[in-house]
Length: 314
Ligand SMILES: Nc1ncnc2c1ncn2[C@@H]1O[C@H](COP(=O)(O)OP(=O)(O)OP(=O)(O)O)[C@@H](O)[C@H]1O
Ligand SMILES: [Mg+2]
Image (cartoon, rainbow, N blue to C red; front, side):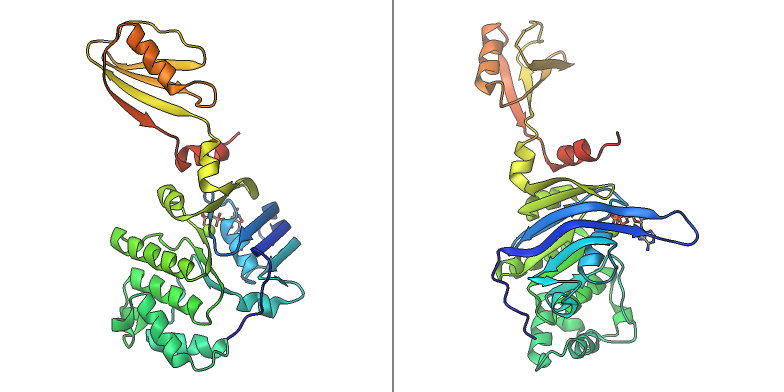
C-alpha cells in the first residue's frame, strides 16, 4: 500500500478543532474547545492529560472514528474532510479499547486487515510485522488464548500492516506489565528510527519524559502547554537542593529569592529559581555561615510537576 508523498515537515496539523458530543440523554459535552497542534514528522509526540481531558476524542477524530464539530485536520497532507481516504491510509491506530475477534488467529486477523487496506503481497509483510511485535510464536493460536499484553501487541501489528507513515497509540501501555511495557517501548523506538511518526497518549509521566521528544498537555479540552519535552520542563524554573549538614543546622541564612526549610535538625531543603539565583552562591553562603555540609542532593523538576501545575483545578 502506498501513501501519497508529504513534502512538508508536518505529519499532522490541527487547527481550531472543536468537538461537542450531543447525547439525547444528557447535556452536550464540549470535549475539545479549539485545539491547535503541529505534530512534526518523525517525532514521538506525546499527548498527556487527566481522565476526560479529550485525548481519545482528539485521536479518534484524526483517525476518522469520531466526527469533529468544527476546525481543520490535515493528516500527511490530506484534509480529513476532502481527502479522508488518503488521510486514513496514512495512519495506523491502536485504540484505547482492545477490539479483537477471539475466533481469529493473529495471522488471520492480519490477513483480514491487509485485505481491508488492499495490501499487495501481504505474506512477507505479515510475517515481518508479527515478528516486530514478538508474536511469531503465536501466529496460529486463537486470539482468545492470547494474554492481555499479547492482544495489545496484536492490535499494534494490525495498525502496522498497511505500513502507514504515522502510528497512533492510545494508552499503549495501560495495564501492561513492566517487562512488556519495556518491550513495547523498544518496538516503538525501532519503528520511529525507521521513520514512522508516533503519536501516543499515556498516563505514565516518567515514560512520556523518557520517550517523547515533543508533548502537548491537554486539560478540559484545551492545549495548556506544548513543545519540546526538555524545554517545557526547563520552563518550570525551579530547583531544589537537599542538604545534609555535619551538625544540626542552626544558622538562619538570609538569601533573596531562596527558601530554606528545615526537614530534620541536620537536613535542609533549599528551593530557588535557577534563572534568578546561582546555586554556587547558595552553597558558599552556607559554608560562610559556619555550617559544614555533609552531602548535597540536587533535584530538577520533572514532567509530573509540570503536569500537576498545568492541570490543577482552578
Ligand atoms: N461518545 C461520547 N459521548 C458523549 N461524551 C463523550 C463520548 N466520548 C467521550 N465523551 C466525553 O468527552 C470528554 C473527553 O473524553 P475522552 O475520552 O476524549 O478523554 P480522555 O482524555 O481520552 O480520557 P482518559 O484519560 O480517561 O482516556 C469526557 O468528558 C467524556 O465523558
Ligand atoms: Mg482516552
